[in-house]
Image (cartoon, rainbow, N blue to C red; front, side, top):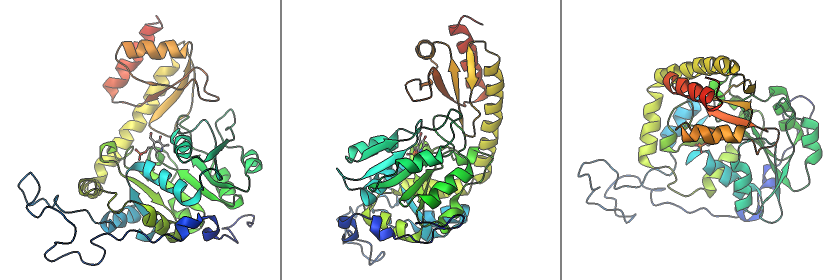
Length: 360
Ligand SMILES: Cc1ncc(COP(=O)(O)O)c(C=O)c1O
């Protein structure tokens, strides 16, 4: 049940949580009670790491990651209690399935073409996946989505900007679904910092059934450290903390994440360069006669249609240019997805694309 234009009038989170998770007593880690002193409690190696320095790597990381969560919260204008940090977005996706979906019974709803991991993760957990396609402009069809909801539909995954199409979903459609769907809406904002629109992160304070996923892998340029965040109500974050592995985030990842917040100018500069290159790439692709349709992008990649896309994809690879063939996805016939590279990489890509089609 929900009200027509404001936050939800009735929502019982515990109703949605699997019984075994509600009843779970979480593993208590060695450092939950005492963090300093002569630490002989966790079977660590007191003689240090192999690097011989006092780097602290012989000790387990903090299970709570308060410092990283504090910085992320500040960055997104929410509270630390609204932040979960994990090993990439993949960990959050996996945990949400485990918390809310009973294997062999519950379902999730996705809106293809979209990021493939939601479906894979559901399949790993033996959770049924229902699909409602985006429309031909790659926007949501909210009424069709609601029509597909069943009693056992626990999670609705939305992705904005969407992968592989690149466009932002309409905010009014997203908010409408958050209000009308009685399960959990997972809004994946992996690419939000490349978009002109603001993150919807503050909405987690308004909607108790909203989880927003973000990542350090894209705009922050730190795919190698595997850091993903979930933003949600304090109650949902507590559930995720209860189910996660005790020491999910390693010390090196946490150190680099904190360092990244000291270098936000550089992050911003790179975002700006990527946006400029995205526009240049779009203009240049548009000049190639075999390229038929280039989707407007709010992300760091472009989806475009090209004649004989699969052959082009293979020929590009033979020339050392690796893009993603997306032609098997619904509504993406003959489509390739190309990440915005550096100016030089983009020039190479464009030149090769012209060449493999015999146009250059
Ligand atoms: C929409 C979307 N979400 C999440 C991810 C993965 O994020 P992470 O590297 O944090 O696991 C990707 C990666 O391509 C993505 O496209």
